[in-house]
Amino acid sequence: MALGSVPLFCFPEGIRLSEEERGFISFSFILTIDVQRIYCSCLIFKELLGKSTCRKLGFSKERPYYSEKALCIISEYSYPDQYCELLQQIYRVGMSKNDVPFCRVVQNLVDELVMAD
Image (tube, rainbow, N blue to C red; front, top):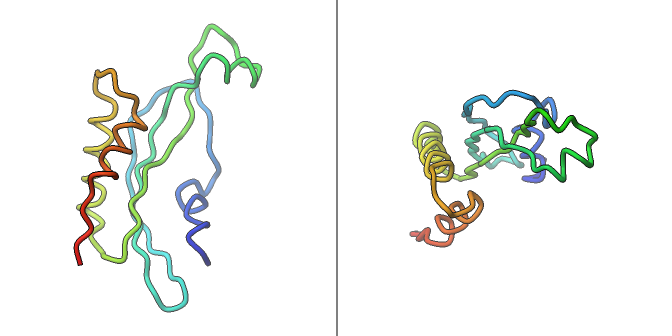
């Protein structure tokens, strides 16, 4: 099993589209690669599909449609509660009313991480 299988664990039933926007859910799981454990925490949320995407999929123009997205933390260290809390805070900051796109918020946070030994 490789880290490439992480999306299968985040979306075991596939990515679903819906007409309703719900809050987020967070959960943790452990991947075992050879004898090494990899700890993963995931936050799934809904994001509004753009008009062009809806048109390509043939969806009605009157209703909004949402797609599932995921934020994950993958680590060698087991801190699932702390990772889920961090993901929730990232989500809240990213979804707050500001002019910065959500992906930019996440990118800036990752770019500023200091990796200590």
